[in-house]
Amino acid sequence: MTEYDMIEYKEVFRERREQKSILQDNEHKSYSLIMTMCTSTMQHRIESDSDFDSNIKDNPYSLLKAIKKKMFDPAKSKYSFAVFTKQLERLLAIRQEDGESLTEYVKRFKQHRDNMKELIGSTFLDKFIKNTEEYQVSDTAGKKKLKDEGFTSWTSFLLLKYSDGKKYGSLKKNLQTQLALKNDQYPKKLSEVTDVLQAHVWDPAYNENLKKKKKQREDAKEAAKEEEAKALAQKKEDVKS
Image 1 (cartoon, one colour):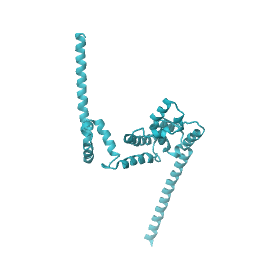
Image 2 (image 1 turned 180 degrees about the vertical axis):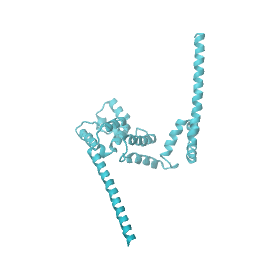
Image 3 (image 1 turned 45 degrees about the horizontal axis):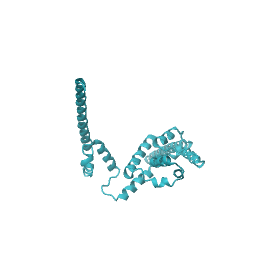
Image 4 (image 1 turned 90 degrees about the vertical axis):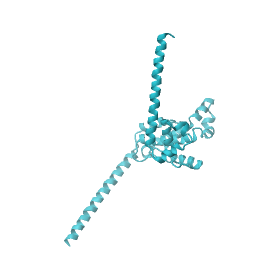
């Protein structure tokens, strides 16, 4: 190494050391800022966590993960099976709400999916997958792929299943029909489900439902006007008499 190389190396090392120092300082500031935005109850729960000293303290990334976990499991002391059951219920109960955009629905679903995965991992479906016909006829590489992608395939199906039936009912029916014909076209990733739903032209039933609701609002508004007019007329009659 020449003298010039040594000088250049020292300069790069100095710059990296300064960058690391700035990063650590910013991480500490970010951690403190996030903690000040938490309620005192949440702060206490975080500081009482068994991983606080070793993993959470002064680590804004771990802190955000801890907050996220505690927000969706508010009770500090819970029976383990109750926690699991509650998370499973939340995942299976999610539905695309009437008028909710696809983006917002997918965002909500991912939140519940991630909470479930963090709680039980992604291998709990292995036993079920081994018993499927597809697994039985696959080679070694195919079997591994089915197990590795099992959780993703399952949650992708859930995302599709619980999307708005008035918008995507015909799409779901067509996929089921194709499967019965030994042509599995079900998307196996969340991104694929999202693409399929975005590309689908909403079913006529959805537009009919919108028209029906609009008419109901208009009828209710007209009925309210009529009632108001009747009340005003009656008031005038009462004044005359």
